[in-house]
Amino acid sequence: MKIGKLSDSDLHRLVLDRLPKSGPDTLTGPGSGLDCAVVRGGGGLVVLTCDPITGAAADIGRIAVHVACNDVASSGLAPRCLLLSLIAPPDCTPESIAALVDQAAAAAESLGVEIVGGHTEVSDAVRRFVVNTTALAFSDGRPVVTSSGAKAGDALLMTRSAGLEGTAILAADRARTLSATLTQGELDEAQRFVERISVVRDGTTAGREGAHAMHDATEGGILGAAWELAAASGLGCVLDAGSIPVDPLTRRICAVLGIDPLRLISSGSMLIATDRPDGMVAALAHERVPAVRIGTLTEDLRRTLRDGERDRPLEPPGPDELFAAL
Image (cartoon, rainbow, N blue to C red; front, side, top):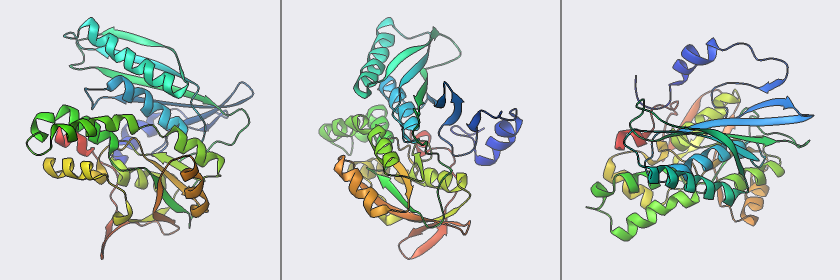
C-alpha cells in the first residue's frame, strides 16, 4: 500500500466499517475528517485524540506534543494532559531518547499541559523513532466544536500559513539537497518553522467566538483538510487557491523538491467554518493570530478548487507530499 494516510475509501472499508457501534455516551466517535472523539464522563464531556509522528526525524518530540494538542484545540478547548508512547529503534542511543523526551517536556510546559503517563521501549519493529501522543481536554460545561458542524454558506477561514510543519521537516531532513539552492541562514529559518506549529490559541479563540466547525491541517495539507471538513459536515465547498497564504520559503523548498505546498503537512494552520468571518478574523487578530478567508461551504456537494480562471475538482487527501520528498 502507499505510504501515508489511508484514502477515504480504504479508511472506511478497512477500518471504520469494522469497528463496533458506538455507545450512548459517545457523542462523536470515529469518522473521516474528525479530529477528536467526544464522550460523556465525570459529569461533563471529555475530548480525546491520538496522533503518531512517523514522517519527521528532527524535533519529533516537540512535533508530537503540538500535533496532538492542536487536534484537541480544534474542539475549541485547551488540552489538559497527554500520554506519550515512544518506540525507539535498536541503533538509538540513550542520549537520543533523552533529547526526544526533553523536547516533548519543553513543548508540553510551553502549553501548560502535563505529560501524565505513556510507554517507552526499544524495538526492532521500527527503523526510526515513532512517537504516539494522546491528548485530553475537559469541557467543564463549555460547548465542544467538531469538524462536522459547518453549515452551508459558512465562510472557511485559515489561520497562519500552509505547510509550516512540512517546511521545518524538509529543511532539516533534506538540508543537503536544499543547500544547493538555499543559504544556511534560510535553512535555519525554515527549520525554526517548527516553533510556529501550535494552533492552540487559534482553536480556543475561535471556539469562544462561536466557530461552527474546525479542523487542523495535518497530513494532506490545506487542501486535504478542507476536503475533510466539508465531507465531515456533509457539504461541498469552493476554495480559492490564490487566497491560501504560503510563506516564500515554503514555496522555494517545495519548488526545489517538486511538491505542492497546498498538500504538504500543515500543522500550524487551523481551518475554521463560521458565519461571522469578519468578526472571527478580528478576534483572532486581537490574539495575534493571522487569518484569511479561503473559501465557502456549500449545500451543493461538489468540492471545487478555483485556481485563477480555472475550476477543478478538489480531490480527497491522499499520501502527503512530505513522503514524496523524503
